[in-house]
Length: 119
Image (cartoon, rainbow, N blue to C red; front, side, top):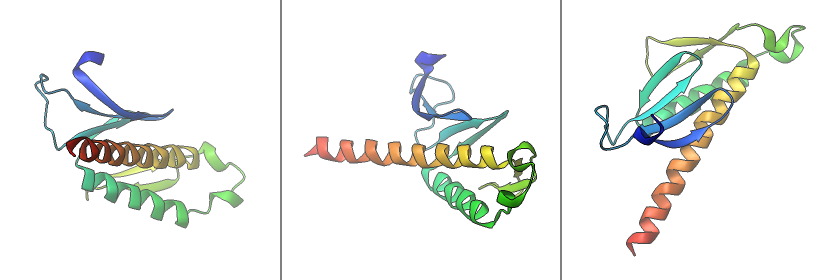
């Protein structure tokens, strides 16, 4: 399986990757984001949207005063799929945030390097 994917970024909660050109699932515009038991096929623009939704969710949660803080999944995280929301805890929300930001950083870095190599 490792030969079929190009890993973009990973952390404790999940991984972002693209299928290699030889794979049957290959679509150069889609990035697969997998965490917990879910997989999302997203464009870069959708990942940007997801990152914004995560940030909005982080600024609106009130878990810091909660005695059980990260042990319950009472945070409703919206996704780029308008009919899909995720129940997460504060720790998972931080990890999803890192996964989105790390993926975007690596995509931007790869684009920057490709541009430099053209010249």
